[in-house]
Image (cartoon, rainbow, N blue to C red):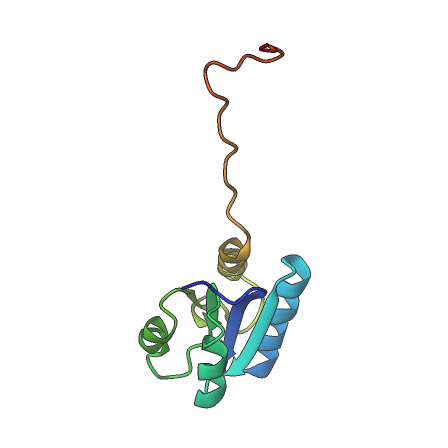
Length: 126
């Protein structure tokens, strides 16, 4: 199952300011299309997950969200932002957590194929 072109991430938030802040930063740093939905609006969550994103960033809001998300979005990498975002000054863990989101969204680098052994640099057959 492929994700919808252009919809790279879904952010499921409990606090709108946090969700919007993460979305703004992802759009600026990675240039991806991000869809937001409030965790407490099940219809919005189902609609957003129906876009088949590569990454789902979610803020835990009391219930075991990760289990349900794994079933609803099996293709997505799930990132629980509530485990790395604190209240107060930014900690190194918060930066590391955001880097995990960035790594998940950046395209994988595929190494260039190695030239075949019978091809020599500058050699012309003919």
